[in-house]
Amino acid sequence: MPIIPYGRQDINQADIDAVAAVLRSDFLTQGPVVPAFEKSVADYCGAGFAVAVNSATSALHIACLALGVGKGDVVWTSPITFVASANCALYCGADVDFVDIDPVTYNLSAERLAEKLALADKSGRLPKVVIPVHLCGQSCNMVDIHALSQRYGFKVIEDASHSTGGKYKGEPIGNCCYSDITVFSFHPVKITTAGEGGMALTNDVQLAKRMRLLRSHGITSDVADMIPRSPAELWNYQQVALGFNYRMTDIHAALGLNQMQRLDEFVAKRHAIAERYDELLKELPLTTPWQHPDSYSAYHLYVIRLKLDGNTKTQQKAYESLRASGILVNLHYIPVYRQPYYAGLGFKEGLCPEAEQYYAEAISLPMYPALNEAQQDLVITTLRKATNT
Ligand SMILES: *Cc1c(COP(=O)(O)O)cnc(C)c1O
Image (cartoon, rainbow, N blue to C red; front, side, top):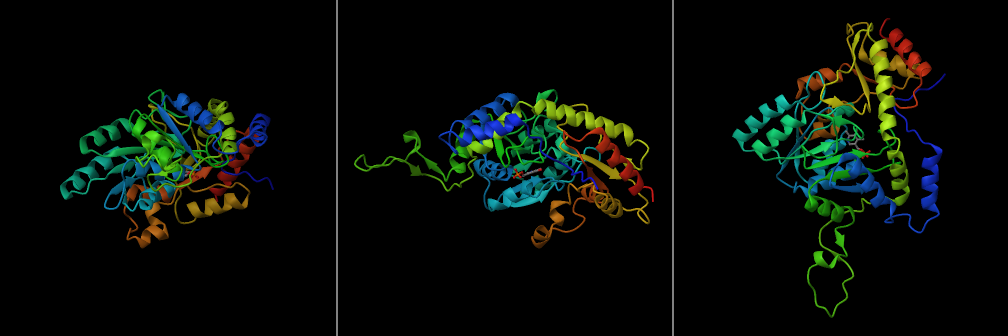
């Protein structure tokens, strides 16, 4: 039985050669390749600064810290995201809350955000940071979210883990025109990979500096950043903040950097696959992903919403029958607040009705650049059977 995963990296000989070259070089970490990768991504996006780290989760954490998130603060994000988008606030000792999704794009809804902000303003508990997530690779309504951030004084971190290579209003996601910081992921299922890795982009030199410090223990060896001490003592470096070891290695950066060459090609292939799905799924009882005209999605995911009767045909049965046939569909995502850990923090089922409805219908079909037409046809025939019995 052929196994078709929902996502998969695409590695070529040049990627392998780039990694091997680092292994033969003088530096495995903190060498020249990490800054080259940072420059490549910053230039691609048109952002001022890029800080590479060992995962997008780490990037979200230091992004929150750089924006001053701490105890007593609240961070808002979408319930339909990977848990890391919310966990980063908890790492900082802050509280987290969720803004319901838009029923058409499945992204954090700017309308629900505006309503929730008006209420929070009255009760004096405005968020310090809002983290919109570009679900499946399609940008959130950043113009409205940015306007709300100006009005209510919160900061914005774009979780763009799904959208490396995507565009919003014709410009690259990651240019931080509507946010303080944008975060990318280079996990193997994402658009490009570094094995593991993440990056935080910003146009603010102070935020970039702070994130660089936090990524490496809070240690600086730049005399200008050190606390003056007796010249009689040797201070080759100082720890001036409590940071982490979140560094990316040159081995990972070499893969990430080389993959940048094929980023546009990967996204174009994903679009071709999405268009073919759109066409071939027309007759099935499901909704294909709607695309906003402002958006050029990176198409990390192709999420369908099943329109089944709920008695004989259910999302769960369709999901299980596809997986039993080797089509390893997935679910992105269970609302974060429904996770047992979050339930333990007091979050209740039903908090975000649109998110719950989405959760009851969504399935992610296989989507990756090397998915060929025969495999895609197999996905569709299997799906047809799974929704027809
Ligand atoms: C993958 C992902 C992350 C975490 O990325 P890592 O690089 O694996 O830490 C964060 N947010 C979203 C939306 C993701 O999909």
